[in-house]
Length: 138
Image (cartoon, rainbow, N blue to C red; front, side, top):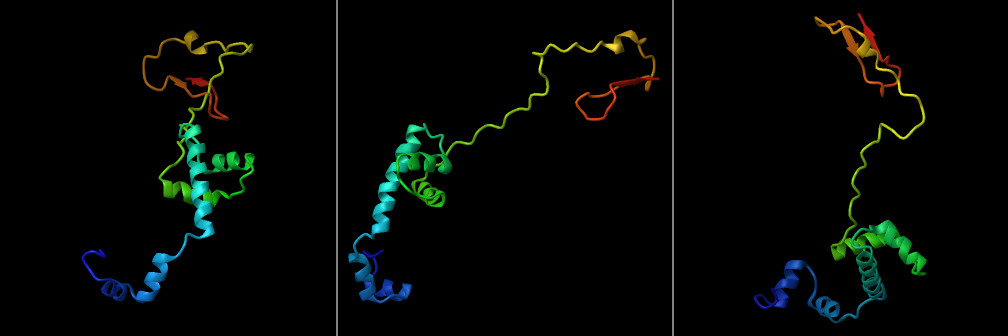
């Protein structure tokens, strides 16, 4: 924008004085910005080493193991600035059946009942629901 417009006009639009603009432009990088740059490089390295899996909590754990003191929120902010994020883990499917046991298998009582000829003669329910009976025969 500075090429198309004068500094004076831009400063007026933004509500800052020209002297403040030139002070800001010539100001040295702060110690915090330097630390953030070094920390960001280390965060990116840790993220790469994890093949993109680690998020901020795990990266902070890695940094602390190396003796670098930082907080999770600062790490999160720097990761956001770098545009990196950890991979989400897939939700596990619940395992409802454990076939590897030495318990006796329940007999199939439905096989001993005559084939139903009309509706509501045989009822079956899911055994995984607490408090439910296996089946009822009318």
